[in-house]
Structures are given as C-alpha cells and as structure tokens.
Length: 491
Ligand code: ADP
Image 1 (cartoon, rainbow, N blue to C red):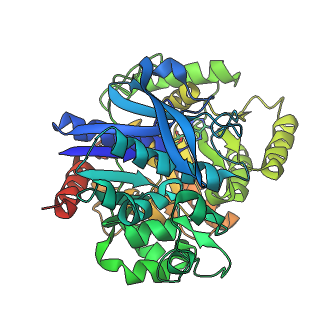
Image 2 (spheres, rainbow, N blue to C red):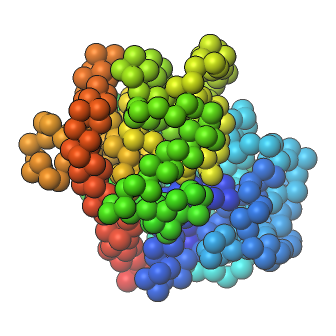
C-alpha cells in the first residue's frame, strides 16, 4: 500500500509533543511491514536540520493557487532517520514557516490551511497518487475537504483519507475568509452546520469539524478518549459531529517506537539496561543527579516531563513537587510552558527552589535530557486534566519508571493501579491511578509508590518489571491502522 502522512510535526526533526512521535513511529512501523510511506511537512526555519539527511530541492517551482492568485513554493526532500520526507516552503512575504517556532501566531489558521492546500497541490502536480492520505489534527482538517470538493475533479478521485485527532482542544477555529483563499468558493454551502460551521460559534468555521465530516475514517488516539470525546465533555463541542459520523470514528491506542524509546539500546543514556539488569538503572539515577546537581541520598526521584499547559494539570504538578519533597523524595521537572502566565509561575518556583539540593526544574524543551530522566527517575507523575493518549506513561513503563496518573483518556487504557485495579491480576498491574483533580487524590496515589520504594524495595522492583513487560510498541496499532486503511481504500 502507498501511504502519505501529512502533518505539522514529525519527531525528532519537528516535535512539540506526542504528535511528532506518533507520525514518525507509525510511519516507521508501516514501512517495516513493506508499505511505501512518504511524509509531507512544513519547512520550518527552526526545525532540527541536524536530523535530516540529504536535504535537496525536489520540486523547485510549485505554484499553489491561493486567494485569487498563487504562492510560489519550493519542495525539499530528505530522510529523517530513514523516513522519506517532503518539506514545503512557501516564498511569500509573511514568512509562514519562518517564525522561529512551530505554533502560536494569530495567523496559524491561515498558515496551516495553506500548508494543507500546498500538500494536495504537490501530490496532484507531481503525480503522486497514494492509496491513503493520513492527516493529523486541526492543522490538516481542511485537507479532506479540499480533496473531496476540488482535487477529486483533478485526477485524485481514488485517494482516501484517514484523519487522526490527537487533541480536540485545538480545532482551528477561524473566520470564513479562508474559504475564498483556499478555493472553496461557495460560502453558503460550506458554511453550514452540516459541514464546516462551528457547532457553538455561529460566526466561525471549524477545520477539525471539516476533517471529521469529509474523511473516510476518523480516529483518536485511545479507545477511552474516543468514548470521552463522543459522549463526554472532551470533544470540546464536537460530540454531536462525532455522533453524526460515529460509524467511521474509533480510538486506536498510540504506540511508542521501541527503536528510540528503549533503555537497552538508548544512546542518550550512559548505562543501558533491561528488566533483568535494573542495577544499571541506578547508575543512570546517579548520572541524572550529577547532571542536575542533586545530592546523592537514599531517596526515590519523582519526575514530570511534559508541556506546562492547563491540559497537563499544572496545579497538580506543582502540588506533586512539594508533596514529593515533603515525603522525603527528590523531584525533577522538564517542561516548557505554553503561556506566559504559567511560565512566570514556574520561573518563580525555580528561583524559589534554586538552592534546594533535592529538586530541579528545567524549563525548556530538551529531547536528550528527557531520555536521561525517564531512565534515572523512579516515579513519573502524569496528573493531566485530560489526556487523549499520553506517551510519557508509556515511555516511563518501558524504562521501569513507575507511573502515577490521573484516570482519564489513554491513561485509563494503559496504567493499572497496583493496589486497586480489579480488571487485572496483581502480576499485571503497573502503576498508580487517581481520579479526582485535587491535591488529596494526587497524594493518595503519589504517597503509595514513595512508601513502597522506602518500605519494600523488592516489591517496587517487581512493579517496575511488570511495567517493563507490557508491549506498547507500534505492533498492535500498526495492525489496526492497516486494517482501517484497507477498509477505506478505493476498491
Ligand atoms: P502531548 O502530545 O499532549 O504534549 P504526550 O504525552 O502525548 O503529550 O507526548 C509528549 C512527548 O513530548 C513525549 O515524547 C515527551 O517525552 C515529550 N516532551 C514533552 N515535554 C518535553 C520537554 N520539555 N522536553 C523534552 N521532551 C518533552
């Protein structure tokens, strides 16, 4: 099968969060199984060019119809750890992908609508005719709309779309001007509740809704979150749309790429280990303490890695830090804030705790350091308000770092409470779960692994090993996506 992934991220070259990991990991899995996979990405100025091999211009003059005229683009091609990627660079005065960051500008809806159009134009003009176009999140929500309404009539009638939603909170909500810019010219037709009109803001257009309405299959990244989005509040206003299209909507749990996230081969950590050699994990703990200037003492390390965003339950992260210290543990945080308010709050905490030898806050995005933290920490907290899938708990399990999670979204599908989960026998349980989003609930879960580490080290080691025994690779999700692609493929 020939599959093209269209996305705004692909790890490690463009990564703001889990989307990047998933786009890379799924592509690799499909290729290993013998399918042809290509990726189309924006050519950002700030991406990690050191992870691209053989970058060259593949298509110098791509003219993309836009806003009654056309925008001149170049398409570059290169390999990202073996994956064939095409990077689109528009040559316009707004410098759409020359902002020194991936997201966060007022014209994001315009930039990514253009990217979606350019991806289709590139496929059309270069005569690429994939069986399936797999696109991701709000940034590419208009792609299936334009494919079905425009490009189908220009030789692309057999292409099918699988649309994966990684985060319902960001939907691409904007004004109707974009319709004319993209060539979707019949405004009353498109700006209708059946199609692109936002369900709650009568003046706004919603890209993600368009993606749901027009794609052949729609997925989100865990079965439990599929349920939450459809029936609960986590669809952020799209529950009705999902209901109308429920026959093509389902949850497929993300995997992680065990060629990257694997303590037995991880080149970013000083001491490789597996579940039989957990003594080497202790050496990584020592290395982590040295790197972050923590004192060497008989205490577990509790960690948090993630975007510092409301979604991640920052108030509980904050509480976990002080609770861990009060319980005699050390605490390490690696996070980048998504708003100035949250950034200021954590900068303030960092200054306050600067001389504390048991605590380190690293307020940046640092892929290499994240590997050392997964390997060196004992406990990982994931106290999210909502979590479509969550990769940090999956990576932690692989590294023998016991997850303490809030029971939402994909965390419910992947972490099973050591003391209370009745769906699993004791030898299959792998972490700790709490449900309420308050300090007491967090404490009820966090105190238990700290107590186990202190009072029953062999019990703690066994729990680490039970987590490491889980297979959250791309193997199973790879099967599920292929089944879905086959199902929607043009016969
Ligand atoms: P989300 O996609 O909501 O940000 P996920 O748990 O799905 O959250 O994926 C997060 C990914 O990003 C993981 O690979 C995690 O290790 C990584 N990550 C998050 N924050 C940072 C950071 N500050 N530095 C390095 N890696 C990070």
